Every structure is written in structure tokens, then in C-alpha cells.
Image 1: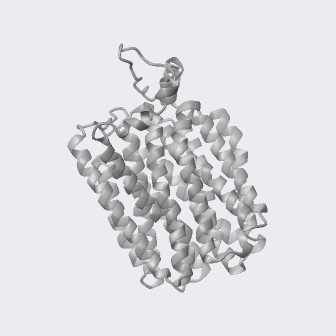
Image 2: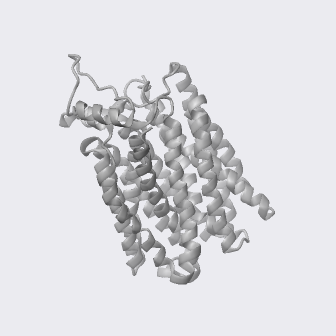
Length: 437
């Protein structure tokens, strides 16, 4: 495995996770202090601003990455969400804070699918899902870091200091620009085959197959009208149904992920737990996410990512619903941890499925649009939690999120059944990509 590629992408996604989870971690402080005049319903709106930005970033990331390269896009995304955090730190109004979170969301949404596509290029044969799972542990390590930032920095220095911490990734940008190699798939698609072959040899991975034209010759740079072929290809023949199933599953999954990420500390305080315990839930939730990524990656490489995702969503729905029941603290800690194990990796296994079953030339577009369509759910989740909390129906927030998990279980389950009829043995690997005929 190209340890350098995975390591650099891991650090980038760590900062992505910190920036994503920091709002939910400091939100109880902001609500208690009535900072910027924030109320629960307005807090939900602000949470949705970031996920709306992520929608824009995810929808455009694949197309931009396929044109300018995934390395340049990753550098741009880290720079953008770091500078946007500085805007949040100095904001004097809800409008300025909301603009900062929206711009941060654009960078956050563009980084994840690009990093996933990057490590998929350098993953060993038969280990794509596990490699993606290892990458996504960084996202939850960032969530853990956000809880400790809230515990150690916000109390003495205030909530603005937490967003200044999120500017620190700017120091990482020069190393990312210097040492991260370009995507192999991008180089092959652009006709830079010799450069790609050198990189593949250096990092001990296989060179992606180059696309061929009707004359059987390797194609180089795409014509302007061909840039949309990757997107159109997701709907050719009978593939529209499979594509829509992935998008619907991603919608419910991200509604659940970002709804819980935004409101978990606040909802648990509403259940009667102290702030320290509520932030401990964030740590446990993300520790569970790290364990879940590793377990799900291994299981998905053996049994198939869509099957594992379906089972994981079912278990997530049970765990989230149980959080609405007041239980002994030790039991609640256990439920939060196990919910983190299943919830976070269930969504990532959707991305793993799409990445593995896409051709190299349209992989970034396929993952980006699946993530992007799911971002509609990510926008809706924080807003929904805010509305329920403002209406005094916080308990219903857990129920609503559980129902979202059940819907994703159904959609990815159907996709798994359809995929099992099409997939040939050994095709669920990066080198034996299923083109979804």
C-alpha cells in the first residue's frame, strides 16, 4: 500500500472531521451564552448551512477533480475550509457566521470524495473497502479532537477559540502540495500514462486500465463535450435504478450522520446528562466510528459493501432509537459507542460500493454525486433536529433519525440484491471494477 498517500489523505480528512464536528461540540456553549443571538431553531439552520456547502462541494468535486486533478482539488479544499473557520472565529453576526460555515462546507464536501477516490487508486487488490475504512477513521478522530477542543479550550477562552484551532490545517497545506502524488486514474485519463506508470511502480500498486476509443487506441485528454459522459453513464441502460438506490440510501444515511453529529451533545443534555457527559458521548460515538470503519472494511471486502451497509443501518436504527430511552449512564455509554460503530461505517460503505463498482475514469464523479445527493439529507438533518428541539420534542429527534436509518437499510439492501445478480466473482476489487451494466 502507498503509506504516504494514505497518510497524507488521512491527515487531510482528520482536519475535515475536526471542522465538521466542532460546531456540534461548541453548540451547547453557544446556546447557553446566547452567542450571536442563536436559538435552537436558528442553530439548526446554521448546521444546515455547512451541509448545504458540503452539497455544493460534493456535487462539483468529481467533475473538477476529473479536469484539474485530485491533488490540486484536495489542496484547495483544505485551504478553503481553514480560511472559512477564521471567518467564523471573527464573525460578529449570524449572517457572517453562516457564510463562514457555508464556505467551510464547500471545502469539506469536496475533500471527502476526492480523498476516497485518491486512496482507491493506490489501494492493494481486494482491499479497497478496507483502505477507505482506514481513511475514514481520520474523520472520526477529528470528531474526538473536536470534543476535547470544546472541553479544554472553550471553557477558558470561549467558542471563538475553537474555530481558530480549525485554522491550523493551513500549516499542513505546503506539505500536502509537495508530497502528495497525483491520482493514477487522472493521469491515465489525461493520457499521461508514462507518468502514471512511474508512480505506480514507486508505490507498488497496479496501473488503472486506460479507456480505449473505437479504434482500440488509448484515449488521452477528453473533449469538452465528453466531460459529462461519466455522469450520463450512471443512467445508461438499466443503471438509473441502481444509481437512484445509492442516492436514496445516501440521503437517509447522511441525514442520520449529520443530524446526530450536530445535535448529539445538545439532545443528550436535554435527556438530563451533564455537559461533560454529553461531550463524552461525542468521544465514544467517534471511537465507535473508528472501530466500525475497520470492522466494516474487512467485512465488506469479504461479503460485499452493500450487504454490510444494509445490516449496519438496521443496527444503527435500533441504537439511535434506544438513545431516546433514559438508561443507566454505563448502558447509555455502551449504546452510544455501538451506534457509532454501525452508523458511520454504514454510510462509508455506500461510498465504498460506488467507488469499487465505478470505472477509473468516472470514479470521482460517481462517488461525488452519490455523496452530493446524500448532502440533501445532510442539509435536512440538522434543520430537522433544530425544529424538533425548538418545539420541545427533542425525544422525537432520535425517532426521526432512527427512521432515516431504516430507510437507508431498505434502499441499500435492494441495491445489494440487484448487485448480487450482476457481480461476477472477484469483481468487487479496484482492479476488477464492476461497470454496472
